[in-house]
Length: 128
Image 1 (spheres, rainbow, N blue to C red):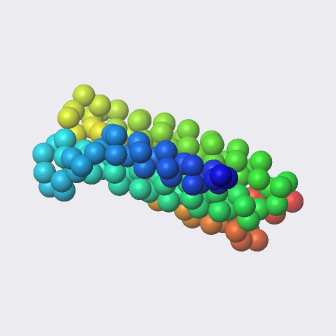
Image 2: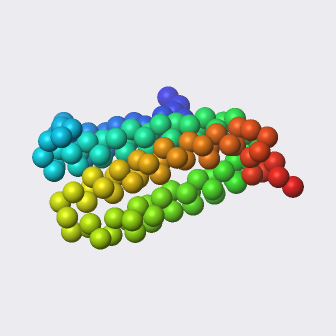
């Protein structure tokens, strides 16, 4: 059986989503329930971007892929760093997981545009 990288990521994230957030998500519920909702929303957004990333990688030529891989890996590190820094003052608060994962979700949703750019003539490897 052969799986694409995106499919493997989605399967792993789906299992991880259930393990972390479980069925505890209840919008407008307790702090723990709203934290769980934020985790689930992030995991869904992250899975969508992982699938898009795999699709874009397949669409690129072999010489373009390393540049996208490098860009995407750097973006993942920067996303985590930006959100940790943005929520540092709330780290000891019970709502910190929600705030942190909402930041991750927003950053992840914004990444779609960067990935879609690779499918246009304006992508980074097309520049001289």
